[in-house]
Image (cartoon, rainbow, N blue to C red):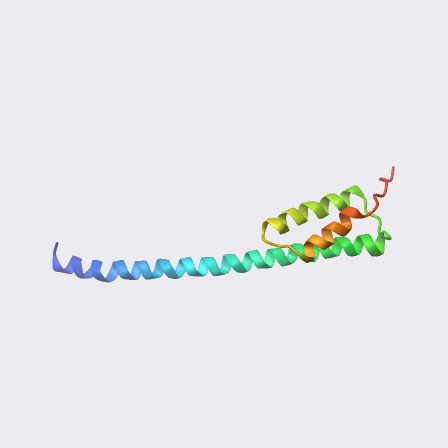
Length: 102
């Protein structure tokens, strides 16, 4: 191999490997931040649904609210959320069911 090409490869390969490691590290960091942010938004929405049930509906939930709560909780739990979100969803799921308005 000509010396010029060897010099270019000796410089290029480590630079590309270092760049790839940097990109992967940034993707991991940003991905983790996105997951944590999404989990927090889901928890806030569960809190909003519980607040709606408690204050607007006097501790009574309809099927729609229970379904939305369960779907949000399933995603929240799959993303690693537990504890407070579980308690919120349990409160909503245990609430008496209001009959749908006809």
